[in-house]
Length: 140
Image (cartoon, rainbow, N blue to C red; front, side, top):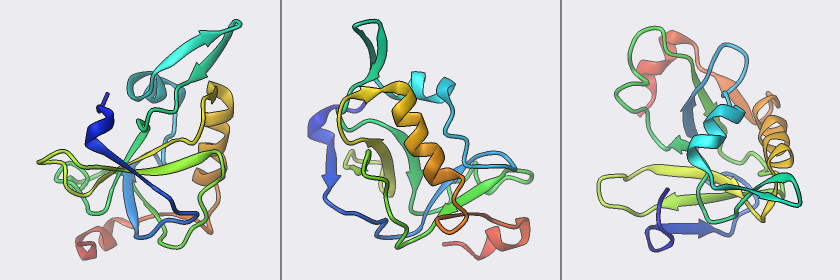
């Protein structure tokens, strides 16, 4: 988890630049297993609840070295795409993490609601696009 002093929560309703993340052939893989690694989840009245502390699913404003390896499925979250109201875009300010962002919960909410907002984003082809293997070399 990244500490609060190392993040900046952007007050934006849409993505301000293209962002990239690995996934599979169907979507950008906003999975429950990954959420359990990246986000603080507590039980509140028996319901698994994500904590809105700025941590979330990673995305980058560039292709990382691992993304450039053959066979990787890379998804572009398009600049200008609307961010679901349940989500916030967070910039990682730690030295050595330039270009790293997180798609975090806007408020404390049930885990299933957070994953649902990510699914809404990840399955909407007007907002995300699977990069063809030949186009990866053209990305900055």
